[in-house]
Image 1 (cartoon, rainbow, N blue to C red):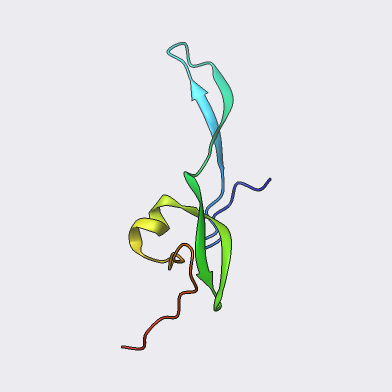
Image 2 (cartoon, rainbow, N blue to C red):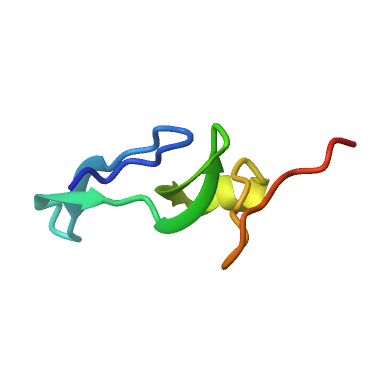
Length: 73
């Protein structure tokens, strides 16, 4: 399963753990992904979104249990 945000494309990063003796071992940083029911192009879909996108309001979450129709402002 891909560790990638469906909104911004943020993916896992690679690097090294470095000890006090300067020994380097490989490690991975994963994005904090959440599975969210969201409105995508007028349809409700389950997408994986990083918490940064959720906080920034880049995702319109779908209402539970009934069809959600946005009201034009």
